[in-house]
Image (cartoon, rainbow, N blue to C red; front, side):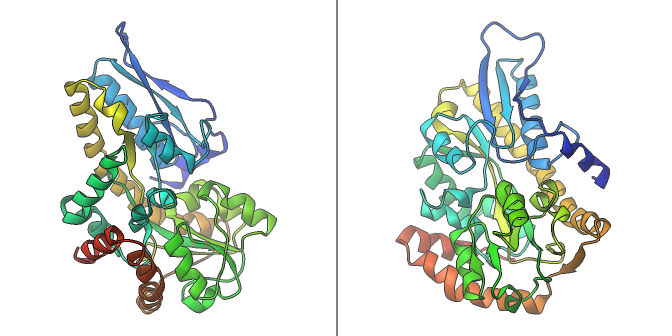
Length: 340
């Protein structure tokens, strides 16, 4: 991945992309995939959009065109937060979705953006084969959602003010965290919370309603925040911000498919995890280069600063989450049992 692959982002794909095998059989079932990220191609653009295109192409190929996909990037089909509820109800087939956005509907899923809880990609990916992963899968299955691809992303912070590394740096700043728990930590550090989806950060920072935002490295790149930021802190040497952002599918739609089709979908989703991991890590590195080229000051989180952030998180976000219900408390305990 290089900076040049981002140059196509100025021409985002607003219209759905129809991917089918050729020739298509008579009985084709077309599924819709929606996400909030900028559109691209199989080879260029935001890796999350590329992931769903790779998924659609491979499933179409392996099912001999029995399954086809329409891809709606940039929340062009429906608003960002509403996609989870639509998947649950079977009104939307698939979404690559920041799971913590659904915390208002299913509070337990906020475990997927708990500050200071996941400290590395290896730790996050280990959830899949640990008890925390099994319980999270069961929780979502019961609510009509299937996880197809486990995607974790480290995050950083873009700011129109000064560099943000330690908790004291956010005092008095209007800042976006991305989840209830992240916001609780930032508020305790002295930040003024503004809650917007990542695809609305640019406009909020441009108008001055937002001074700084914490989000994934990929979003910091794809939403071109280097155009308005004065400083950025990357997650390449560690971060308090690791987000679970899986490719999900409506269980009702999945259950309505044939056994062979289900097998292809599950195998394809799992196989794409290696691509997602490599791409997310590459974006952590590319972020610094892209922002430096735009004359934005680049910094990294220090171990000492991260320890301070984690202390605040334990006293605020972790405590609040565990107190919401027994399921939340249980998930937090299981997550803490996964080695860093």
